[in-house]
Image (tube, rainbow, N blue to C red):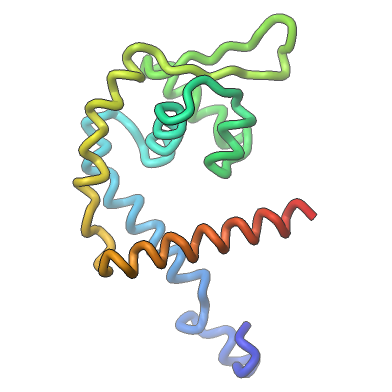
Length: 152
């Protein structure tokens, strides 16, 4: 709550920071549906694939930290990606608590088909390039601060 607001004003939707963040995020995810449909990916699956394309093999825990998702959310998503033939999920016999993820050949080749998605999404947020960089930087700073606060 902003300190100059009365208690009554603090309950107005127009005075909330969380609501425009939520509504914008929901709208951006909705706009991703069309370019991701030919790839047979949801937005969340797409961000998981982007991390695997960038960093390669990793554990489910490492992936979860990068995409800010817990195991309960990731597990069904990863099962669907495996069923689609995009990833391998490997649980070593000597450490059944760890689940290793790697891309299949089909998952690797999907990267080439996904290369145009960011270009198709340009302009989905009607802000200047400078404002988009500022928004991204502010959101990343906020996320970092929230993660640090959570770890304490």
